[in-house]
Image: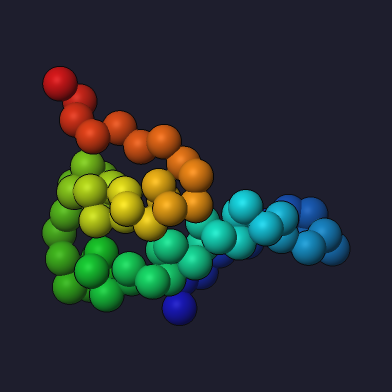
Length: 63
């Protein structure tokens, strides 16, 4: 499970953030620091499709 917190703790997490956490949860084995040493760009590459499915625009290259 990925540890995260939303503030204020008395409020329910908004659905768009819940979806974002779900993308990380769905890919945790592919990006886990205990098993891999990816750069942030490499992690983003593995998460991109999931982010795009929930409506985020994701850069494909720094070039």
